[in-house]
Amino acid sequence: MAKNGYSKKAFAKLDKAYREALEKAAEIAKMTPLQVWKKLDQAGGDSLEVLAGVTFESIENAGFKPMHAQRMAKMFREEAGSTSKPAAKESKAEKPADPESPEGFLSSLGISGGDNMLALLALMGGQGGGMGDTLTSLIDPVIFLPTYFKVVHSKPRHPAVGLLRGAYGTKLVICFDTATGDGSVEATAQYMKELDEGFDDVAEGLYTHQDVTYKLFAIGDYPAHLVDMCPINEKPLRSGVCSDTGIKWGEVELSARQLVYIAVNMTREANAGHVDAQHRLFNIASKGFDALAARYRRSKVRFDELRARDELPTLRVEIGTRSRTSSPSRNADPFHRDDDQAGHQRY
Image 1 (spheres, rainbow, N blue to C red):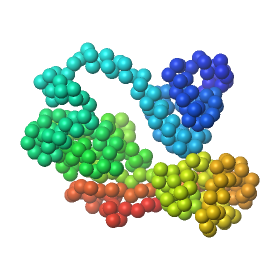
Image 2: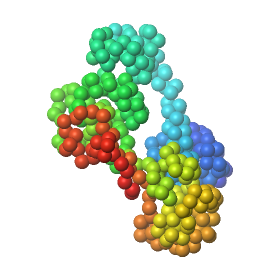
Image 3: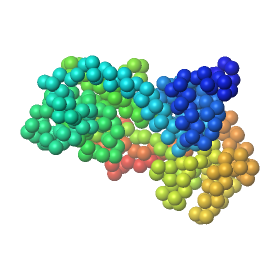
Image 4: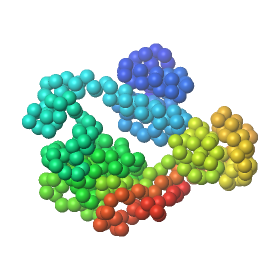
């Protein structure tokens, strides 16, 4: 926390990269840089490195709107990455790839990086046979993990999924933190390395790496994950939007959405029986928590009671596990549900 207060003078003395990131965050949140700095610093975000490693939920909990928090989290990661890019380029210049290695061969063709390798392998039949199979066998599949985690939920037929499945079959090798739903490239890479070195599979499908215990999944499978839900009908929001009414609840701060939920579903103080009424609720909620609390006083009292007991509704809903492989141990996996059983559960 800032020792000398959150003044312009103190702000000017901050690390340049951190200060510039705060200024960009202020543009996103439509606040002053000092306001953004105070909120993030008091929540523990006292450096760009720290902010680049947190989830958007942590930023939201520091006092920002959900959609703003998502954009800020992405921006912080990009800013942190840009500060290390010059060093990475210099390192590459000092240690060129071995021209006889697969990476060196692709580099000589002007192709580098996991995604471009995937494109080349797909064109050469990397998932079918021939030269593609030969090239795939020479490249460490770990190089495809960053792409894999980006596409596994939305593109099950992406080459990264097929290539990794070709290397590990139905073995449980992909590490997911079931508390957050996030996959770990580092933990998965380490576990794959240990398997390649001859270590046995871990017991019960649980793998601990750097004091974090991960649940192991087969290639193409992933755990249930949480998304925001509509405070009125309790259905998952699609990119922050209610699919029934088109209301952009994701743009409303969490505390206001919680108060709407209480007023509609608990105290019944608010009428949400038709679309017009729901839009009116949204218009009030968009003005902020205080405007909503002034209109629904009984619900505000219930909100305070629930907050004192740490029992406020999280307004998060679980989207069920998707399984796309034929892992023999699937039925023993307590986190697994078949596609036709996958649903959602409130939290």
